Length: 322
Image (cartoon, rainbow, N blue to C red; front, top):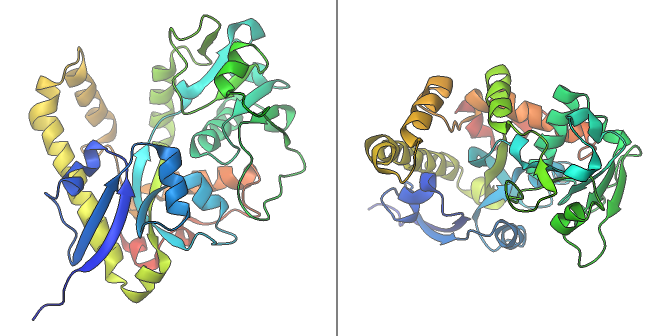
């Protein structure tokens, strides 16, 4: 007689790559998964940090910043639930006189918080590829870093934005010269707000061709006590998420690239496969180690961790074989 399935709760966003899991077409082996779909990143993060779920889509930057403490009580699997290029999420006020990335040096630049995954990648890319001196900038954060005992590096000039203000309003009024955000502030949102990289698509394509990095935003975490008690859960969840993603790919190829309400979807679908191969959203440790390593290097350089962690330290041990 087989054992009853292990009942676990999970939260994630309503992504196409998760849809087969959400609708039950794909079920993880040996697990009865109660899924809460939440499209609000902030509330999902807060609920997950409070331990309301056994499995959670989580901000990777926050997870990395917690590595010295491991206070969250969760361990990552190399399932990168959300990836996004961030060249198109760096905005400027046209009146600031900023015309190129190096013009950010010495300016006031807004961030949602110092530890966000989006800002982590954007700051790392600006420093590494465009000669931006992060220590020369006054960073205006909408929220402080909410990690116990975290101390900003001595070179970091950071202010907390006035209570009740928004990053968008600060940029629109030119109280800050530029801003890094996960929100859409251009084009055609405010006459004084524009992209730092007007041709951000070309910048992102060149970055991917050079680095083979598709920036990781959110990672799947599992309660550590569950993995300790049931180590097989890691592989079961990994396989289920991978199967759900493959179902998404089939739908894109067989239906969406022909019938999506779009001018150029088929051309973009084919361009992406030429650039990245058939698996454009890679998961698993071996194929993504270089991306995780770059993110960990950025985190250390930006003072989120006291040392540079190795990718092997990020994940449940059995997942290093994926």
